[in-house]
Structures are given as structure tokens and as C-alpha cells.
Amino acid sequence: MLSKTFGSAVYGVNATIITIEVTVGQGMRFFMVGLPDSAVKESEQRVEASLKYFNYRMPRQKVVVNLAPADIRKEGSAYDLPIALCVLQASDQLVAQKNLEDYIIMGELSLDGNLRPIKGVLPIAIEARKLGYKGFILPAANAHEAAIVNNLDVIPVENLKDAIEFFEGTKDITPITIDTRDIFLSTLNEYEADFEHVQGQENIKRALEISAAGGHNAIMIGPPGSGKTMLAKRIPSILPPLTLHEALETTKIHSVAGKLGTKAALISRRPFRAPHHTVSDAALVGGGSFPQPGEISLAHNGVLFLDELPEFKRTVLEVMRQPLEERRVTISRTKWAIEFPANFMLIASMNPCPCGYYNHPEKECVCPPGAVQRYLNKISGPLLDRIDLHVEVTPVSFDQIASTRKSENSAAIRERVIKARQIQTERFKENTGIYCNAMMPSQMVKEICDINPAGKVLLKTAMERLGLSARAYDRILKVSRTIADLAASPDIKIEHLAEAIQYRSLDRESWAG
Image (cartoon, rainbow, N blue to C red; front, side, top):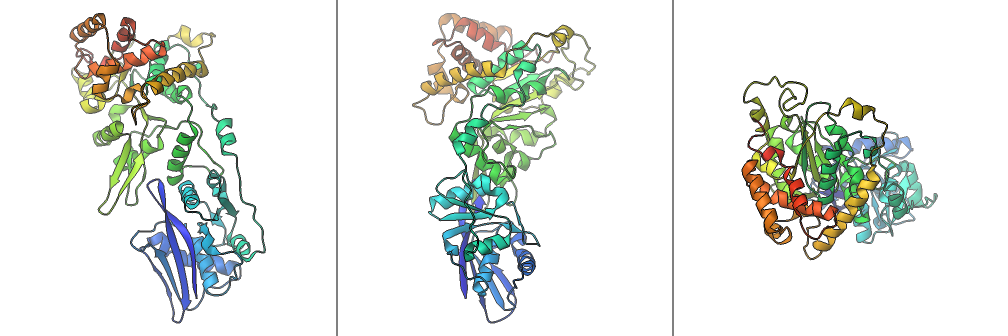
């Protein structure tokens, strides 16, 4: 007898429907075909143990399991549940009152028949609704994640027995429903860290406000303990809130990577990712034999923070250059290519030298001659070229630390950032794929960032006297445009240009001595 149902495989951030067919006939042994990997092949033992636990039997006949399309490699243990149900139906142990072919069924079985959570539930649910399936049967731990998708019955099951009884019609399982917008709005403005708790560092807060307002990448240079990491962690709290579309897009990526909690439904806050400097190329940009999203994709629509930037391997930093420009990662293999979105804000920090005290107001640098420049040279020019703001962070004085005066909170800063972003949205409404000043190409900079003759004289003088490199020219204009937007000024004024010039520390030829 032939039994058939449907599962799914996730490639990139999109799902593909997989047909699971089982026949039981004359002969012996268990056969599985359709390019299964080791984890899929091992489902035979998990399925047999689960059936025995609930007093069912694995047929002592020839059992053939086919996973179609046969030319697509299947990975993981999530096919256990559909295979088990099809084996029962094909061997006449399951007399289904509901049609297995109306549902997408996924789940990993433990040896006692309970179901463990699986990865990639959200893109599978989206594909199931798109193709008109009646419902999605899955582990209860993943139900809230799948229930984000409306117009699809999400049936949570705790174990194999629940699934059997559901199809036999002896047990009613109420589909999980959630109000996506209510969940989205209820946690939209919840942040653990707030700029209100940062004493001093007003100039750094200002630079990070500009960075958030224009989507600019930034690097903070300062001695140990000056607050670089603490400030970086608070950047998501001043970024514009996610739209519902962005939240769904971000949740899909985290779902595929298995980074959502068992009770999580929707990511409503901008992600903040801070990988350690020992991270590998594949872990940062994504990859592997069966490609998974890397840190830069997990930071999509949020912030990627690289602490102690020169300590990262050179090869790791260089693979970021293309994603920073294209806002996506393409991982190519012989037969196919997978694309992951990677639209993130890069925030980096570094010590000014190996000992950490170059340019320190009180402590003396003990590095030998040339060490500062060699340390800086660990960051390549092309990568530095993609960072708009260079901010020097100085230690906070005792008086500032001990002060009881409250600092401006993140909500007030965020309000200004949102207003500046609204101006940019209106400015770039005719330009597809550009929504903030940092994304402007060079030809657009000349049109939009026009400065008056006095501004040109100031910029020329600054470049000559401070020894600024040519790469600083466009960056200064972009940042000055953002500063003007924060001031709600239609034109770039002298003061906006002057402030932007000071954020090019590393471009000064004299910076490293």
C-alpha cells in the first residue's frame, strides 16, 4: 500500500515542499531514497522506537521511503514524524479520517515518541499557506513561531500519539492562533540598555545619533574602559522601530538558524550581534556544506558590533566588504546558490595601539616606534573606506561618573532619529533600494549633497591642513547631509560640514604619529 504526505526543506530563507511517500510490500529491509543525509537515514531507528513505545510495530516487510524531488539533498531529523505516520498508514495501522496529503507535517521524534523542536518553521509555514495546504502539523514548542502566519491551521502536537489520534479523528486539537500585530506592538519599545544610564560621553552619543539617523557605519577608537562596548550596546535603542515587514524578514532568518526560543513568536526589536574576534569566515558571513546564515545575516535590520576590530583575522574582515556594499550574501555551490539578506549597520571599536594608551590624556603609551601604524594597518583601506564615522573616545572623568545629573534617554534621541529618517524616506522615494543617506552612490552624492562656495573652501582647507585622504570626501558629504537632516535643514550649512569633518580621525595622515 502507498501512503503520501508532505514536508519541507529550507534553502536560504525560503522553503521547498518535499513529498514523502512510503510503500510497504513483499520483501525485507528498510530502504530510504531521495538523497537523504545521515540524520535523515537514522530516522529508521527513531521511528521504530517511537512506534514500539505506543504499541505499534514497524512492518517486517520491505519498506521504501521516497523523499521527492529526488535530486535535492534532504538534511536533518525533521522528517521523522511524517515518515512514521506514512509507515503506519501504509501498513494499515492508521485508518485516517483526515487526509495526510492536506497537511505539511514536520517534527523530530525522540525514542519515547515525544517531539523535539525543529528549525526553519516560519518559512515553511509561509510556503504552506502560499500553496494552499489546509494546515501545518508540528511540535508544540514551535507552534507560536508558525502561528505568525494567518489563514493556516497550525496544529501543535506533543508526541506521535497525538498526531495519530488527530488523523484518526479521536482527538480534537485546537489550532494555535495569535495576534501578530499585538505581539509586535507590545514589545516594540522594550530595550534592556538605555543612553540615560551613560554618564558623560556627550560627543560620542552625538556621533552615534548621527550614525543611526543616516544608517552610517562607525568605528570608535579609545583606550580600555572608556565605554566603547557599553555605548555600542545601546545603539539599537535609538534606531527607528522595525516595521512589521522587517520584523517578519528578521524572524525568518533567526528561524532558519534555530536562534528563536521555544516560546518566541516574532522578533520585534532590532537585532544586536557581537561575535567574538575568533569567529571564522563561514560563521560571520554564512556557509557550510548545508549553508546557514552567518552573523551578518543574523544582524539583518539591526547592528553588527565588532569589538577590538584589529584582533579579527584579516580574511574574516575582508569577506565583509561585498556584503557591506550589496546588503546581501550569496553563497555559491556547484549546483546552486543561496542568498541571505545582510542589511546591517556596522559598529566597530578598537584600541588606538597594542598597549591601548596612545593619545591617552593621563597614561603614557609604551608601544615602540611604528607600532601604532602597524596596528592600524591590520584594518585594510577598502574596509575602512566603508566606515563613515571615526570617533575618538576618551575616558570619563571622576566628576562625570559621580554626577547625579540624568542624561538624555534613548527615547528622546530616537525621536530625532525617526524624524531625520522620514526626511530621507521622502528624499529617496523614487530610488529603489536606497532609503538612507549612507546608501547613496557617488553620483547621487554630488546631486543631493551640494554645498555652497564657502563650504567648498572649508572642505578644501580641512583636507589640506588635516591631511585627509581622498576617500574622506564623499563620506564627509554624506555625514554632513545627515547632520543637516537632524537639524531639519534643507541645505548643508558650514556648521554641518565642520561637524562632519571632525569624524574622520583615522583619515588624518598625522593620526598615528
